[in-house]
Length: 265
Image 1 (tube, rainbow, N blue to C red):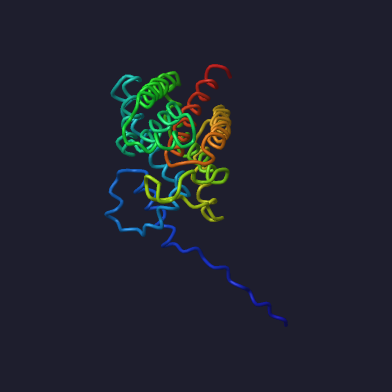
Image 2 (cartoon, one colour):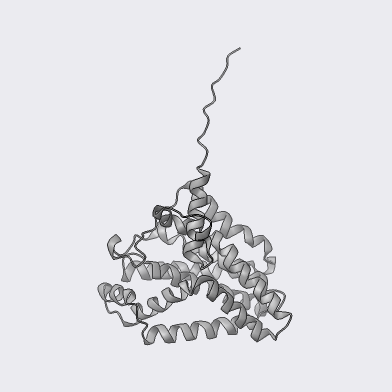
């Protein structure tokens, strides 16, 4: 009998994957995951690979908060408290990037001007007005949805839009030099196993969404494509602030899509 030698495929480094996931949770939330263990600084270059998985936590907590608050308070109050819950959970990380994005593209006339303004730690008039309009529209959209649907929309839109926005690393290079990064880290492009984890994180929650609302998922994809073209034209790349801003804007139009589905189909 002729025996065939099987070559064993290398197993993924579980410890490395867990460190990368913990780094993402430390980076994207204010929960004290640093108490579990310390992670090498290199792990923070992989946080976008686990961004959608972090969305299970941030989106899930926001959905759970809405459900709990809706048992005791009117719809409008429950929506506001749910939005505030994620703000506290993430430390307004994405909102800070969104404000910088509005300031940069509102006040900057060229690439250097946009990057300089986005790096400034002070918020300008465009950032203030942008955040006010963002939350007014967010609140208006969410209170327009049927109450039983809101938790599922909140839970699904967060990780799905993070999954969509992670493709920015595929289409665009980093716009600054490494030493000019505000977070002092530049994200690496994902390998095959990281793409699989990212896809699971972004797509698996879709099973929770009523089939009638799947059409809302087209809205963030279209906006993402448009904003990537804008970034390529104006900056020639992306920054961390751009990642945060694109996520919040894509999530916003995802909620817009849910309202459009509710009232038109």
